[in-house]
Every structure is written in C-alpha cells, then in structure tokens.
Image (cartoon, rainbow, N blue to C red; front, side, top):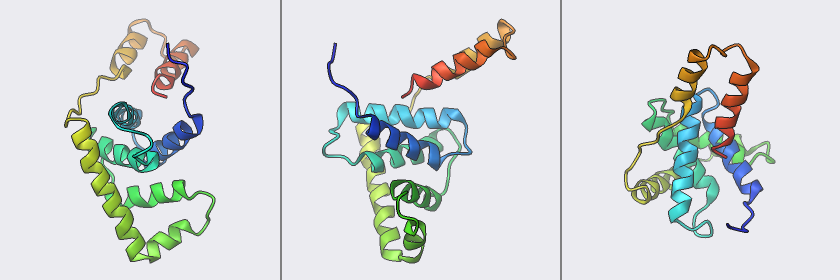
Length: 159
C-alpha cells in the first residue's frame, strides 16, 4: 500500500481543464480524457510534464476518440482561460497576441504526439456507463435516488 498522498490541487486543476474544455460534451468524453491522463502519468514523470498541458491534450484527444471533437482553437482558448483564471485579461491577450496563440498551439500539438506515443496509440477505454444504464433499466430504478448515487459513484471513480 502506498503512503503517497495525491496532490489534490493538481487533480483539481486537471479536472477543471478537462471539464472546462468540454463542458457541453458527454460524460464519457471527460472520462476518456481522465483515463488518458492517468495512463500517461503512469508512464511519464509529473516533474517533466506540465499537468495542465497534458490535461488539455488528453481532452482534445478524447474529443476525437469519442467523436465529440472541438476545434483546436476552442480548446486552446478555454484551457488558457482556466489555467490563467486569476487573470481577467488572459483570454483577450491570447486572442490578440498571435505569437502567444501559436506558442500554445504548438505546445498542444507537440503534447499530442507525446501522449499518443506514450499511450502506444491505444485508445480503447471500457467505461462502466453502458452496463450501469442497463442495470438501472433492468432493476427499474431510473427515477430512484439509487440511480443518481450509482452514477456519482462511477464518476468519482475516475478522480
């Protein structure tokens, strides 16, 4: 058993990026991004890889894999806004500064290649959502609080 305590700030920040980049996308896309992030950091150093960049890359990649893609420009803007949330001018700065935008774009595209190679181009993720929905229907608990608790439990398992 590991005595290592997870860095909850790191996890919270990554989750904010993952959720923010696809706030209007299905939960499965966010869950896929989280799995990609976990798989990446199982093989790569946290010290050598910026968690915010990797979280952004994983969200961008998960959108493609789950067929809920977002344009790279949108991903860059949302991610930059979340990463710089204490700076109210961050979004305007990246929109108006082509060099800064291009720098972020290259960072994401380079990060995408690193994540792809690290994951060995293995994008298979088996989520528990489909079996959970089937069980909820089978046991006729769709309008029950139990269904919501089960759904929350599954989502919390990705953290």
